Amino acid sequence: MNVAVAKTTTGATLDGTFAAARGRLPGTGSVTETRQRAFDAFTVGGLPTRRVEEWKYTDLRRLLGDVAPLAAAPDAATLAEARAAVAALKDGDTQKLVLVDGVFAADLSDLATENGVTVHLLSAVLANEANPARADLLLSKVNDVMLSLNAAFATDGLVIGVADGTELTKPLQIVHVATRPHAASFTRSLVQIGHKAKATLVETFVATEAAKAYQVHDTTVIWVGDDSDLQHVRVMEDAIDAASIASAIVTVGARTKFNTFSLTTGGAVSRYQSFITLAGEGSELSTNSIHLLRGQQHGDCTFVIDHATPGCLSRENFRAVLDERAHSVFQGKINVHQIAQQTDGKMMSRALLLSDDAEIDNKPELEIFADDVQCGHGATVGALDDSLLFYLRARGLPEKEAQALLIQAFVGEALESIVNDDLRDVAIGAAERWLGTRA
Image (cartoon, rainbow, N blue to C red; front, side):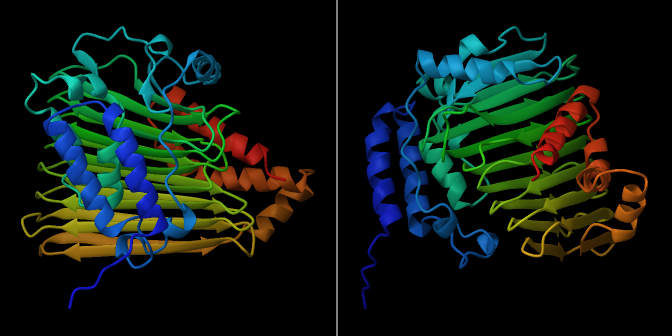
């Protein structure tokens, strides 16, 4: 029996949006074909609902409702607003590469690269018909409908290469600025760190005052070579009514250190999903993530770590501070392949609820097919310690200041994982801004 399934309103809207946008998206030929296949893959399932196990706690069809129209290319006025937003950042000495509403803004970026570093625009690479592999930049080894949607609509991004043996003197920073109300941007960046290289990559998400209820769809693909060291810092301070769906796909080589930190304070709905494969022996992975949410914010932090070779170590540390009716989700999954003997993998989630109405869902998963491993997970949920609050208040601190001190201590371990002093200060500043706006 054939059953005709009517498209949802979202699906019908996206069909029209994709048809209208297709002609102005960068790339022709094989790129266009790859975009169409990616969009077809997305339309099979549409926006994820609770029926999709990986999205059980983040029902995008309910939370997002629809995908907003593609943002218009930035004009002189929006670029001026974006310039002010970038100038307001206090990120220390970094090489800033700025994307405004999903489009690279050369005038706002620092294009002087260090020796051993190359930076190209994704849009230019996709449009280069002499490059037979250009369409591959839109492909993904991870099967996820939102990654497919990103590949279909990606407007711009950066293709960054750090050559073998290069040690960067200052961090590379990708700054995403939203300036439009109720508009969607789709960005995709690829970063390749060579063998025996050392680098710091920063991703920052901010908005101008005019940006309201916008949507960010971002993907970052990272390869880290053997014997390398990559520090990755991600700070999401989008507008409080924005939606952000961001993905990282990371492949780590042998004897390499990869340290990644993420802080989320913005967005009505946000999900940061990271798929990390330890593909070389003897590597070390450290992930530290923080949610600072209030109101009716919904934040989702999903990490999937594949131990695909022997002798690797991974540590996942998640902290959430939730006020009012905020809802946080932590999904951590460690896959240990049969070949990955002597794996050492652990994950820990801790949540601090400042309100009886705040909520967190923890979903740790271990899939182990090797014999000689050490793996474990843990989770705690609690409130501020009344005895410590009393101790601080007895010494003259107002209640809010006493609470702030305890919250800072709670997230301090994760913040201290940031190696770069300037970037650590940036993350601390973002956390302090969140604390400073508590009622």
